[in-house]
Amino acid sequence: MKEQKKISTRQIIIFYLIYTFAIKFVMLPHLLSLDSGSNGWISAIIGSVIELLVLFAVVSYLKGEEDIYADLRKKTTVVGAKIILFILFTFFMLQAVLTLTHTQDVLGSTIYENFEELLLVIPMLLLAIYFCYAPTRSVFRSGELFFVLIIVGLGLALLPAIDKVNFNELNMRGDILRGVLNNLIFFEGALILLMFRGDIKIEKHFTKKFMSWAVVGAVVFVAFVAIYYTIFGPLFIYKPLGVIDIAGQNSYISQNGRLDWIIVCIWFVLLVIRFGMLFFAAFASMRYVSHVRFQPAIIVFPLAIVIYVLFATDFVDLLPVWLGGGR
Image (cartoon, rainbow, N blue to C red):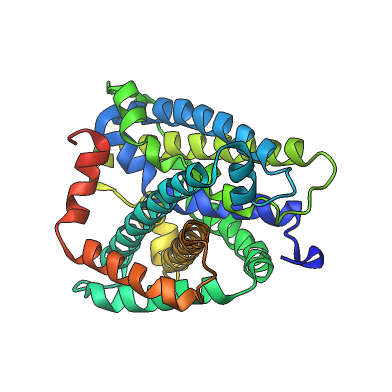
């Protein structure tokens, strides 16, 4: 990437928050509760601390001028660099499949009663192809607009619901450690940042700024998880869509112009962005592994087939069991 096209510190921070919030405020509260009960907020604290530690290491690594492949090739071997990047490719593809299923859950539970998977897969993959073709910085600049929508969406969902908070609902017992381990794979926002090493304009106090905003994001997430459990009480097990369910639960939001639909749309967009960036990261990883600069469509097409096969078979249904140790 040319020097004048580099990503700014503000853009990479906003991208990280959008990428992680897309899952944290929709799916994670419910997933954490499956093992930890209403103590899932404690699992969220532990998981967030682990995430911040990993993020600090990654952010420190991002200060280098060379891309990840060139750096790994120096520190290991060509074969070693390719193996690491292939592992990252596999990881990003797995996350893309999971994000696709979460997107289907949001649409199928809010807008469509009978939802055909193919109607979701085809446009999502076309969008993923666009992400691979589009200049990286232009994608990051669009994130600055969507970040405002995140704040609006959280405000619309939480502020009218504050009067329903009842902290007595946090007394239910749960396996906190199991909740952390079974859902740790979703605290992975730092890893995708590796693919942008060398593309970021490192500004003064880069690490301090990044980590400060990451801590703020973690605090907001943990507070949201606690509020989620206090609002729903024992019924949280039947509320799998986090911020969307909170919005639909509140009479002001759901009866005055159906403002909960705005929140559904906001989080659908965030999931789409997350999916596109995962596809971009997978493509970038495979380009390094193959060591051939294929046109994006040549790599995206077989990846599209892989995602569709996984999405249309029972393999996707088994993912939570494999990742969670038998949920």
